[in-house]
Amino acid sequence: MITFIIAILVGLVPMIPAVIFFLRNRKDAPESATRSLLMGLNGFNVVIGLMAFGIGLLWLATPSSAMANSLLQTTSTTSDPYASLAAGISTGLAAIGAGIAVSGTGAAAVGTIAEKPESFGRSLIFVGLAEGIAIYGLIISFMVLNR
Image (cartoon, rainbow, N blue to C red; front, side, top):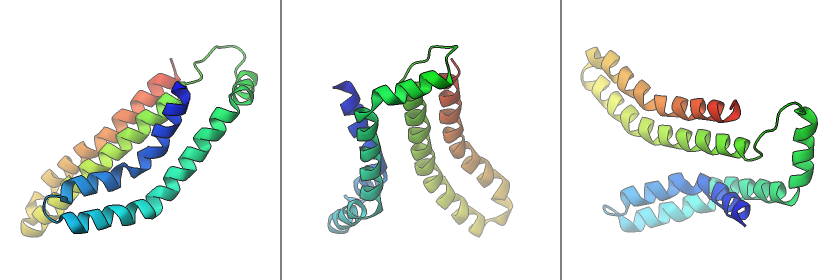
């Protein structure tokens, strides 16, 4: 049962950017935010969500063959079958967080550089710090996979 819930949550992860956009813009323009949310959910995010949901269902339908294949490849060590799922979730959520952070800092950096071109270096540092969130998620996934 828990694996089914995890598969559903992984399928819903690509819809997070559309919901965040809706939550940010619902106070200023609720009608256009709702319209944008529906268009976003009807578009690319739903296709990716359905693909991830289908892959999750396939993974749930054939766990024995997937585990047998992994056991054939690595016979010397015993590994957690959910380690790759944990690594993927940590990398994916960190990349989503980095995308949200870079969208705000990147827009501010471009505006700052347009007004004061000498502040390019400082702006680049802030955008790089926001991008570091994705690197943290990648490091965590490497730590999970290599334990």
